[in-house]
Each structure stands twice: as structure tokens, then as C-alpha cells.
Amino acid sequence: MPTVSPQTTEQPLPSPGRPKKKITIIGAGISGLVAAYELERRGHRVEILEGRLDVGGRVRTHRFLPGRPGPSVELGAMRVPATHRRTMHYIRELGLADRVREFRTLFQDDAAYLETPSGHQRIRDASQTLVAELRRRLGSHDYDDATVLFGAWLAVRVNAIAPRRFRESIHDGLDREILGLVEGIDLRPYVYGRGRDRIDLHALFAGHPQIQAGCTGRLYRFVEDIVNETSSRLIRLHGGMDQIAHRLRDRVRGPIGRGQEVVGIEVRDRDVVLRMRRGFGTVTRNCDYVLCTVPFSVLRTMDLVGFDDEKRAIVHDMKYWSATKVAFHCREAFWEAEGITGGGSFTGGLIRQTYYPPAADDPALGAALLASYTIGDDADVLGRLRRPDRIALILDELTAIHPQLKIPGMILGVADQVWGTAPSSRGAAAVRWGKDIATCEAERRSAARPQGRLFFAGEHCSTYPAWIEGAIESADNAVREIEFHETGGSTAVVTGGCAVSEEPA
Ligand SMILES: Cc1cc2nc3c(=O)[nH]c(=O)nc-3n(C[C@H](O)[C@H](O)[C@H](O)COP(=O)(O)OP(=O)(O)OC[C@H]3O[C@@H](n4cnc5c(N)ncnc54)[C@H](O)[C@@H]3O)c2cc1C
Image 1 (cartoon, helix red, strand yellow):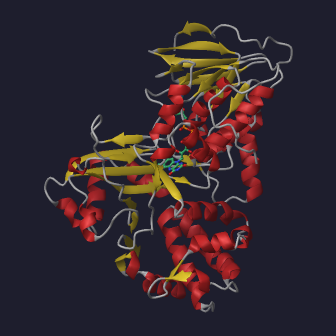
Image 2 (spheres, protein in one colour):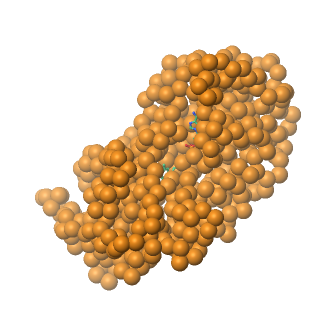
Image 3 (cartoon, protein in one colour):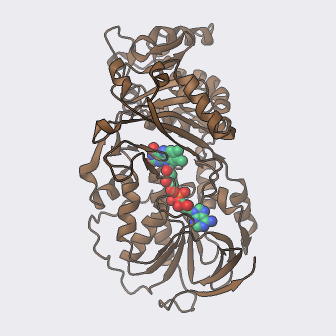
């Protein structure tokens, strides 16, 4: 695995005698911005073509009252595992270390709710029900009480995080594979709570890496992600995650064109031709080098020429999951009166997860509630509804545990994002859950493999798909590949801009 550059300043890096290149980057998400920043530090020239009017891509902070210290909500990435060292590196590098705060997640606030077979229960009261449910499912399998306690709290995380079809397909595997791996470990040090009915899964996974390592193939990545997503070592950025993108944007010196939608890519021997939408027609650009960071779910809708068969196959076949988020601007943080001080509820039903973001700088301006966060087929169900129906459904389900939402004047505004159908992403993230490690790596290599002078980056080209960490890792790798790409005798000295010509649609 590549290591993060130990440099912590934005000083130019020495690049002994390598010819300088001119690189056109498609996409100003995190991978495109990091690549631009690092290429410039190495003396290369970059320009970015971004299809939307803002940078950040799938890192998107919504401010309910722009320009005022009101509440905000993350419609894309919202937390970073402290173990994601590349992401943490850039947070420091970009001067954002003083904005780092703890991100409180699902299962961290005992007053929050869980959907259980006995209905919604406070997390602190749910253990007995969860254990009874697992014992029922296990039937005649005879495991220790502590193993069953572990299984029960793992199962509820799986229910909360995995989309419907996936969670149905893996329950058996979880029961058979993981409980077998845990039985025989002394779990007493990990059991806690007044009723000795809770178990510290993260300490257990950290103390016994053989559990995750023993999860053959299909479960490995999934277990890694659920451990990360419900870890107590998650951080957020006070003021919004989009500050990462905005700080990078401010440091990139080359032009960042907004509203520059690329609709076609042709790979040729010595250059790459991009076709971009312009009014009712298109314009073309001949570029020395191109780094494409758009998700393959978008790339496969473009006109692609000069790609080899294997590359076409991975662009076409890479699987993406959707995500849908719906947030309310509430008059006040009414959940605090119920003792909920943050974290999230596993609300179940169609809305799945509900988060209670931290208070706004000025609480008199209201509070944000991330009413529903869904992924995969659960997100598709909500995404297919008309917006008013989606909002009505979420309100209806959520008032079962939070009736205050029905109080007139409680909801001041709504923000939502259906990633599955957004033209700039056509999905939330590439999915590797359910694939063994070798298959994941083969897919990653194939996704990242260049075509002539066309290179690829983006979370889908990384070992951390669906994380900012993956976007950065892929940018790191692409920068190195571009830097060391042999020019084959053609001029690699930076020349003027790309040749542009217009043609009708
Ligand atoms: C709902 C959700 C929750 C998430 N939660 C987390 C989290 O908590 N923590 C975490 O670390 N990660 C999270 N992620 C993942 C993280 O946001 C992504 O992995 C990362 O932001 C992807 O960056 P990228 O540069 O690979 O792609 P993108 O951010 O998608 O960047 C690609 C860019 O290309 C642009 N583009 C697309 N098409 C074109 C075109 N035709 N022409 C020109 N430009 C184009 C897009 O507008 C975009 O700006 C989440 C993602 C989603 C959707």
C-alpha cells in the first residue's frame, strides 16, 4: 500500500529533471482536487473541467441559512475514521486541524432508538430483545452467552447499515462464520454496562484481528466498513466537510472551469480528445494528458473511443449503490428534551437511519435533523418517489418516535439529495461488499489502468471505495503514474493550452 507523503507544507516538491507535463483533470471532487494540488507541487501544469457549478463532488455540505451561523447538514460524506491517515493528513495540511470534532454515530447515544422485533426501543433497553431474536434465529446452535451477545449487537449493526438485499444475503454467513470465530475467545474484558448486556465490538475486533481476517472473502470488506462506520474514533469538521474541497480549490493555481461537462473521450496515440457540451452543440479539446475522476456510472454514458475491451468492460460493469439523504431544518433540537445529545437512531422501516447533528453556532436559528439516510436498494425505493411523497413518507415514519415533528412550525425547511439519479454521480459509491479480497484488488487495478495518456482516479479506483480516503489514495497513485509516464519521444515540455474547436451536436 502506498504511503502518505510525509510533507506537511505546500512547498513545491523537488522533481529531479523530470519533464513537466500539462494535465487536464475531469472532475473537481476530492480526487481531482488532490491530484491537481499534488501535480502542481511537482511543477506540472493543470486545468480542471468540472461539470457542476461548485467543487467537492460527493462531499456536499448544505447550509440551511447561507451566510448566517445557522444549522447545516452533510448531504454527502459526513465522517472520517481517525485511521484514514491520508484524509487526516490533508485535514492537517489544509489548516483544518482546529475544526476537527468527534463525530457521534449510530449506537453511541444510549438514549437514541433502535428498531427491534418488539418495536422501537431505546438503545439502553434493547439488549434482551436483540439477544432473544438471535437465539431464535440460531435455533439449535449452542453458543456461549457472551458469543450470542456479540452476535446480537453485530447483527443490529448489519441491519442498520446494509441495504435490504445485501443484509438478507449475508445473515447466514455472519451467524456461521463470525460466531464460530468468536466462540472460544474470552469476551469478558469486552462486556460492559450495568446489566453486563453490552459489548465493545471495536475493542474486540482491534484486540483480535483474526476475527476480521477469518471472514472469508465476501464478508471481509463489509465487516471492515461496519466496524469503521460505527467506530468511536470518527471525526467530522466543524463548519462543514466541504471545507476540504474549498481549501484545495483555493490552493490550486491552474484554472478550474465550472459548468464544463465532458460528454466524450477519445484516446489517441499522442493525445486525448475531450468533447464538452456547449449550448446545443459540443466543443472538442486536444489534451496532452487527461486524468478522469468521474465515477464509471457517469463515464459509461459518454462517447468513449480508443478504449480497449477490458477497460470498456470494467467501465460498463462496475457496480454502484445509490444513497438518499433527507434532512429537516427544525425550529429547535427537540430530541435533546428526550435525552438524545447526538449520534443516530436506527429507525428501520423505509427511512433506516436518523442522525442528530451537532447544534448550530447560533441555536436560536434552529437545528438540523438528518431524518433519513439510506443506501442501496433502500435508497432506490425512496429515490423513486416524487419529492413531496418522499418527504411525507419520512415524516410519517419518523413521527412514530419523534411526534414533535408534527407540531406546527417545527419544520422550517427540507434539503435532500438522491445520489442514485444525480447526473454528476448516478450512484453514491462503487460497491465491493460481497466480493473476496482478490476480486476487489483485480477490480481496482483494472479500474485504475490507464489508456494511453488517459489516467484514472476516484474512489472507485482505490482500496477504500465509498470513502474520501479512497479518492485520495487513487489521486496519489495517479499522480505517481502520470509523473513517471514515459513520453515516448513526443514533446513533454509544457506548451500552451489545449487546441479547442467547435462542432454542432
Ligand atoms: C451519501 C454519501 C455519504 C458518504 N459518506 C462518507 C463518509 O461519511 N465518509 C467518507 O470518507 N466518505 C463518504 N462518502 C464517499 C465520499 O464522498 C466519496 O468517496 C468521495 O467524495 C469521492 O470523491 P471522487 O473525487 O472520487 O468523486 P466525486 O466526488 O464524485 O468527484 C467527481 C467529480 O466529477 C464531476 N463530474 C461528473 N461528471 C462529469 C462530467 N461529465 N464532466 C465534468 N465533470 C463531471 C462531478 O460533479 C464531481 O465533482 C459518502 C458518499 C455519499 C454519496
